[in-house]
Image 1 (cartoon, chains in turn orange, green):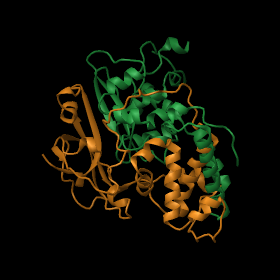
Image 2 (image 1 turned 60 degrees about the vertical axis):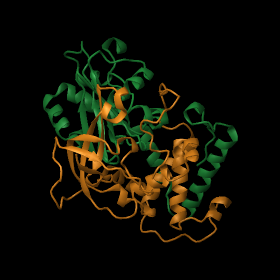
Image 3 (image 1 turned 120 degrees about the horizontal axis):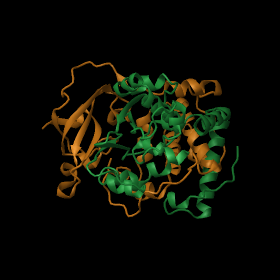
Image 4 (image 1 turned 135 degrees about the vertical axis):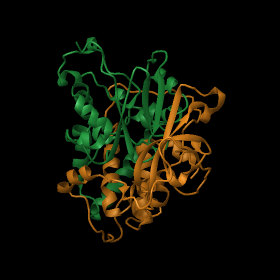
Length: 218
Length: 215
């Protein structure tokens, strides 16, 4: 989708502001928002691309005015509401008003270490040969789906070189809609001037990781 | 679980830094946690454990150990650059947001920098949760177009003739920079070298400390 989350190359007046000795969290509510978001993926049954879409799929002014964990909170509220795990009147009342929906499993203290250690690998078995090889010139497609995509705007329609093959991985554009549709994944590298024109820095190369269906031969 | 510490880092969190709005956020998080807990969807003890894990166990000191090992053990370095995640798992670091780690070696001619322009992808098992600046609009927008400007924001410049390679983490591949070992550290133990490895040097927005900085 064409969201404010897709920030590559956008002009921004503020400098990057590193914070000396930055704590992991800046407020108690950030700790809790982080933890409930991580823990709810198990009973909620959503995948990482559904979570990302829930966070980014909001009006640009809202996305830009919320802090990072405020966006996480908004995304989590949306996911639990969509699935009927929580009702909006419960959020307004700040307490449960309806019976819980049965869930397959929840994250227990005993399960935390194993769940974190396992993670969520996205590599899948290859069922067809890769269309492109290292060194191939490829052009990224110009796409503007209203749904989730991981092809940033600033590389669309540009020619780059395949630098790495990562095997076959779950495709986020469809996974956010519940279909893994695994595809070959490549690192595609672009020259600074290909992306940014004559004012681009010729001593900079930038890459994205791109699934096969984002690419065509150049 | 309740909390009363307010956000003291307003400039990092956009324009909405008035007290009442933050209180509203606190109330909303507390309300949601209460509902999820009372409905049996989350176990508060598991939440506490998640927080404790990322505040005390998983952080950039893990990555520093990986880097120091690579600086002192050429065979380990070889395995690490060939296939990051298994080599990192040898030191006990693995899992969520580090399932597919690729390690990028800086040289005197090439400097790597890692960003996620679309959200906040970051190699958790070796660096922990990302800092605010990494998730901020200025970094996400500028890193891919003007990485030298970003380095200036961090207070340094690369030597003349150093090319920059920026890696936008758009998939589940996670990138860790292997910075160059500082001069003047011949014969140093792995443990001593670890103290030179900064978080930012493993993202590519900083360099390792010099020996005199930790003397």
